[in-house]
Structures are given as C-alpha cells and as structure tokens.
Image 1 (tube, one colour):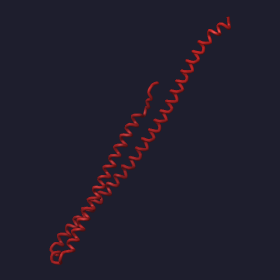
Image 2 (cartoon, rainbow, N blue to C red; image 1 turned 120 degrees about the vertical axis):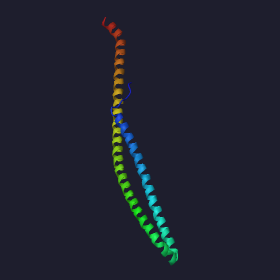
Image 3 (cartoon, rainbow, N blue to C red; image 1 turned 90 degrees about the vertical axis):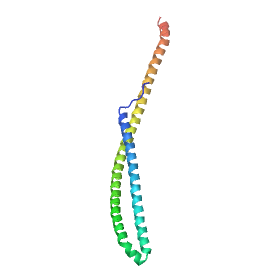
Length: 155
C-alpha cells in the first residue's frame, strides 16, 4: 500500500510554524507589559516614599528640600505618563497579535481537519482497492478449481 500524501501538507506546516511564531511574540509582549507595569509600580512607590519622608520632616528641613522633591516628583509624573502610553501601545499590539494568532490557529485547525478527512478517504479507498484485489484473486482461484470439474461434466 502506498503512503498517504496530502497536497496541502506544506501549507499546514507553514501555518503551524506561523502560529508558533505568533505565540512566542504574544509571550514576549506579555513579558514586556509586565516589565513596564512593574516599573510604573516601582516609580509610584518611590515617589510616595519620598513624599512621605518629606512629610515627616520638620518645617525647616522640609522647606529646604521641598522644591527639589516636587521637581523630581513632576519629572517622575512625566515619566509615568510615558510609561502608561507605552502600556497602552503594548496592549494594542497584543490585541492585534492575539487577533492574528486566533486567525492563524483557526486556519491550522481547519487544515488539520481537512487532512484527517483526506486521510480517512484515502484509507477507505485503499481498503476498497484491497478488497477488489482480494475478490479478483478469489474469483480466479475459484475458476481454476471449477474448470476441471466443468470439463468432466461437459465431456
């Protein structure tokens, strides 16, 4: 029996590799999102700590450092806005990658289903051919066994 070969196997292989690449890109985007969010939380905590320390100081100490601390806090706030924009950009990229990933995965699943259907059809055809060959061999064997008896009856 010859091996089953499916014409679209190469397309299925390429689609599976594309799906794997998109999955890896999604994981990379998720890791980047986590890193940026952690940085936001760390910077917010640092500003809160700095302001809390400033609030615990005496008025004389506080006045001397307050302008510097507030300038630093304003700079940190600008950095945080940039980081929040970065989070929004990463989330938009992740949404687009997720959409493309789902599309490629659906294509791969469809191709796999079509391959299985073609394989089952092939196996049924091969079974039918084998049965036809078996039937032909059986008919020939039967005819050979019956020919001598038929010659004796006719003569």
